[in-house]
View 1 (cartoon, rainbow, N blue to C red):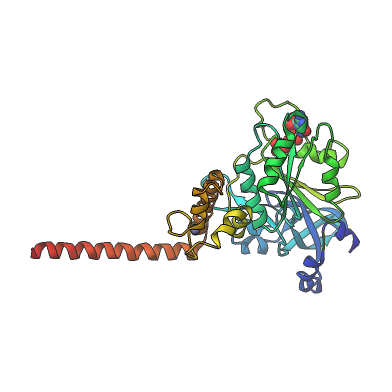
View 2 (cartoon, helix red, strand yellow):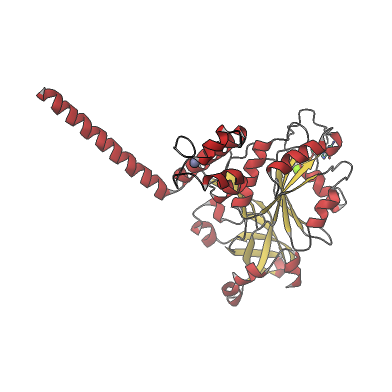
Length: 362
Ligand SMILES: Nc1nc2c(ncn2[C@@H]2O[C@H](COP(=O)(O)OP(=O)(O)OP(=O)(O)O)[C@@H](O)[C@H]2O)c(=O)[nH]1
Ligand SMILES: [Mg+2]
Ligand SMILES: [Zn+2]
C-alpha cells in the first residue's frame, strides 16, 4: 500500500480496518467535502465520492460524517471514476471546536492530523489567550502543536515575542516565519516529512494559504490580494482541503476562524496550564476548584506572585467554558444536574412548608 502511505496511511488504520478489508472494501482519504459530496484520494487516484444512505441515516451527529482528513471504507467504480463511502474509520486524532454561534454542537474541522500548525501573524493578531484556546483543542485531540508566527518581516520585536512564548510554553516548538520573504519556511518544511499530516489553523488573514504556497513552491492557494491594514482579514479560503506536498508530507488548509470556542476538554486544559496542574497536586482538597478553598496551593501561589494573574484568569475562564459545554452536550451530565436541582427545589419547598407550619404554631 505504498501510495496510501504517501497519503498518511499507517499501522493505526491498518489495525482498525482489518474486518472491512476482509469484506472487500478499499480505503481512501477525504480531500474535500462539500455538502455530502466528497473528493477522495485513493490508490486509483482522485475520485468523486458519495456516502451511502445507511451511513447518512445512522449518523447521530454531523461530526460522525466524513470530514477532511478522514480515512473511509469505499467501493470504487473505476469506469465511472467514482467511489461510494460506506464507513468512516476510527479517527486517530481530531481537531474540533464548538460551532460558531449559540448552538451547542461539535464541529470537526479536520481529522488524522499529526502536527497542528497554529498560525498567528506578528501584528495585532499576536495573542496569548487565543493561542491557549487552540493549544487546548490540539492536546485534547491528541495532535502535536507547533506555534507558527507569520509576517516576521513586519515585526520589529520578533525575538522578544518568541522568548515570551518560549517562557510560557517551553515544550512546544515555535517558529517565526515570513511567507512573504520565505524566511524560516525551511524549518516547517523539515517537519512535514513523508506521510505526516499537518494542518494550518488560525484567524483569517494570518497567511495560512501564503505559507502553503511557499511550502509547495508555487501559487496553488488563493491568497487575499488586498494588503490588510487592520490585520483582521476577510475570509479568502472558504473550504478545507488536503494537499500533497511533492516529495514531502500532506498539508491541510483551513478557512480562518473568527471565533474559536472550545468543545469539551479535560486533559487539554491541564496540558496547557501545566504550572497550575502541578500546583494543584498540593491542594488540600482533591477536587479543589482553586477559587475559594482553604489550603489551595494555586491561590497561595497567586497571592505570592508566583503564578501570573492573567494565566490564572484564563485557566478559570476556559475551565468554566468547557464544563458548561460538557453539561450541555452530555445527556447524562444534564440529567445528573437536573436531578440535583429537582432535589434542591424539593428541599426548598419542604423548608418553606416547614417554616410556615412553625410560624403558625408561634
Ligand atoms: N507582510 C507579510 N504579508 C503576508 C505574509 N504572509 C501573508 N501575507 C499577506 O497577508 C494576507 C493574507 O494572506 P492569506 O494567505 O490569504 O491568509 P489566510 O490565513 O490564508 O486567510 P484566510 O484564507 O482568509 O483564512 C495577504 O495579503 C498576504 O499577501 C508575510 O509573511 N508577510
Ligand atoms: Mg487562506
Ligand atoms: Zn486548589
